[in-house]
Length: 132
Image 1 (cartoon, helix red, strand yellow):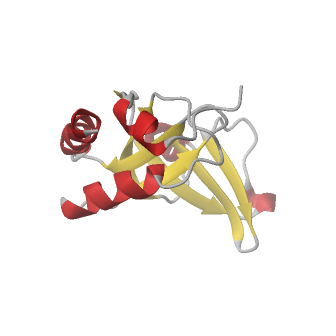
Image 2 (tube, rainbow, N blue to C red):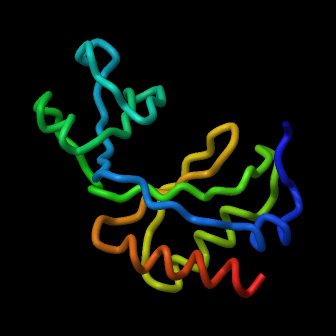
């Protein structure tokens, strides 16, 4: 399954699902990473390891965090080679003065929006799909 690459089709079939929980971004060195963590994402950069994880888990492990956010799954199987999909979404959210941190998985794209702005983001996403 390679996923959809047609931008119009992606936008037209876009469905957004709010994921339970408040997520945060943590950065630590690989040596500092406690065992038993269950991050949603782990990404290694030259400066350290970035973890996206539930805020409650970060607090349990006393990990400093930033950007309390809500995760929205874009429930359309987009290709990893699709062009412009996240750009359209980020641009429309920016018009509402909302930053977004996108993450692409093999099957779906996910966006992290500021906690408290998830309803605004869902409205924007619904409008994008309706206007496509």
